[in-house]
Amino acid sequence: MPQGIIEALRNDHDEVRGMFAELETATGEQRRDLFHQLLSELVRHEVAEEEILRPVSKRDAGEAIANARNREESKAEELLKEMENLDTSTAEFTLKLATLREEVERHAAAEETQEFPLVEAKESPERLEKMGRVYAAAKKAAPTRPHPSAPNTPVAN
Image (cartoon, rainbow, N blue to C red; front, top):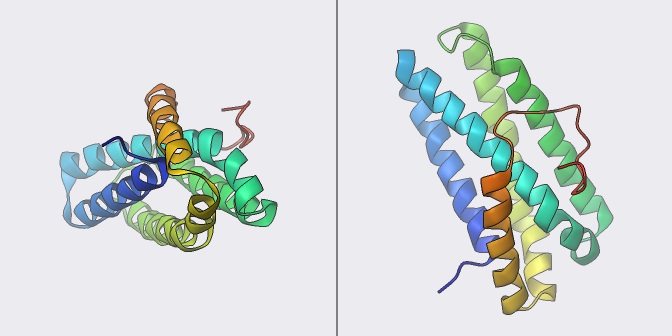
């Protein structure tokens, strides 16, 4: 059965949580490679989410909720940009990684408890499934590097 957008987003959240857990114990090249994989996954997820979910979320969950999630994503993207060229073995990187994990997990929890249920309640299963297909395509086409100065709008993405 095809996956709806909410299920796809929750699966992404679980994947990212697992990547953070792996990063905690990784060292050397493995840590560097895992971080770049995490960076790419987070950026693609956020860009596609802002493009496909947020316009619907603004209507279904309200502008305040949608805008708060966009602000959280911008903050995480700024942190990713700072971390992108850091040596992953440094204390500075480790500190920023802990901050990023906390922010990303708080953001995902807010989406899962505040935003997603309202969208699910107002959209049909068929619409959510269609949005899931469009989300998957948008994620494949999304950039893989952070661009924190770019506006968080579907048109800009």
